[in-house]
Amino acid sequence: MSNRTLLTLCCLLALSLPTLADYDWWRSAQFYQIYPRSFKDSDGDGIGDLVGITQQLSYLKEIGVTATWLSPIFTSPMADFGYDVADFYNIDPMFGTMEDFDNLLARANQLNLKIILDFVPNHSSDECDWFVRSAAGEEEYKDFYVWHTGKVVNGIRQPPTNWISVFRGSQWTWHEGRQAYYLHQFLAKQPDLNYRNPKVVEAMKDVLRFWLRKGVYGFRIDAVPHVFEAAADKNGDFLDEPRNEYVSDPEDYSYLQHIYTTNQPETIDLVYQFREVIEEMNVELGGDDRVLLTEAYAPLDVLMQYYGNGTHNGSQIPFNFELLSNLNINSDAYKYSELLHNWLDNMPEGQVANWVLGNHDQSRIGSRLGTDRIDSINMMLLTLPGISVTYQGEELGMEDVWISWEDTVDPQACQSNPNEFERLTRDPVRTPFQWNDEPLAGFTDGPKTWLPVADNYKLVNVKRERGIPLSHLNIYKQLRALRDLPTLKRGDVTVNAVGPNVLAIKRSLKNEKSYITVINLNNDVELVNLDAVFAELTAELSYVVVSDKSLRRKDDLTHANSVLLMPKEGIVLATV
Image (cartoon, rainbow, N blue to C red; front, side, top):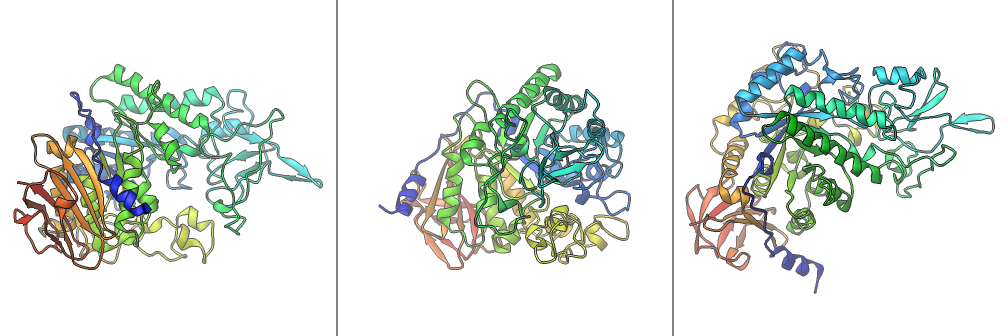
């Protein structure tokens, strides 16, 4: 039996999802990522801010968002646009004030929206008071970071290991004052905290408690796999990492296999400890549960441990990057189905799936998978079981914006060179949100923006798409409305690749209509017999959601044994 035949047979197995009497709000929630610099500018400086977000929270309500997580807004010198935190307890003036944040929380509560903050535990800024004191050797803080005096080779002092930073070059930088190297898995201005020091663990737990008491409903935890490094030996030394023979650039992060600097076993336990803080604060504060969303590009078996281990609860939402990392414009239906099943088939019992198709670090859906697949991908995202995660602008069909080497500001790219930067830059996915067809897309009233606005903003914007029945935005809103139905909220799921070109997803629940998402990934017309794919369908099916590629309209009927799909068309059908 061929692998594809076996995969198709496996895909026909329905996956039963838990039915809970007390269905937690987050289990079928729509999370929406806001990149604050690029969402809405209220003061004309060309950079988005908290007041701008507050002004536009009603838009999130319009598109059915349950909770929104904000990329970092804390005090920062902005070496990595906020992922270098200098003060974990304050708002950066670029984004506003603590009063602005309180107002944002108050408005979100009025709209029944939950605010999630981006928590960066792996490192701080080198301008953080903790690091300044550690570098000065103060007793309380001297071991808050990872320090090492290095090694002397032929009379020359060198870093203690060959470890390479995510942003290129050595992970070790010499500090003249301390007379030692400090570790930084990212920029030199982002020194790694030392989680083998219990004081660091408790200090970061206190940060969580502070913001939870302010009224946030949880955290997206950044770069979790990097938090621990393998422990030093009895002499305080670390091991070099082995080569990746497929990469020849010794400055590139991929030059090494990161077996000592990522996915250490202690990382999982730290996530469990953070969850304990969440549970503690649930008891103290009452109301709806708070949540943890964890960012980890890690092997699947490791990610499943993030949920918990039977005795300890972990992250409710360990981000599922299977689709984001492994789909490309040439992926066929077998690949889509395989990746969906990777998560559904391995998820611990009683846990909830989540689906991430975009974020501020990865190319946009339209640019990565094709602009003619935007609606189909959103149909898949919003009809799969569990939690959907949307990056700002994907509901509009925003695309990557090409930015020249001279105008590039992303440090990951700026630390490379004119020949390599396009492979590394994240600027193209971080351009300003497109609100309308006015100058600079209505993002700002000022004369310029921190990154250029897309050239197509007059065609792709909220105002215009609101008025077009089958725009990306309105299709997204239709799909979101379906998610409130019992079948979409708690129903079982069956995923099947119908040959290489068509993906089909069935959601079913006893005594309720079934819903079938059918996606043609190909440029040819396809005729699909859904009776041969799914059991217990009605002879006729009703069109529930269509796109501008569809010949049929909403509420039209089709025979289940002969569903016609136009090239790149996606539809949602229902039993009648």
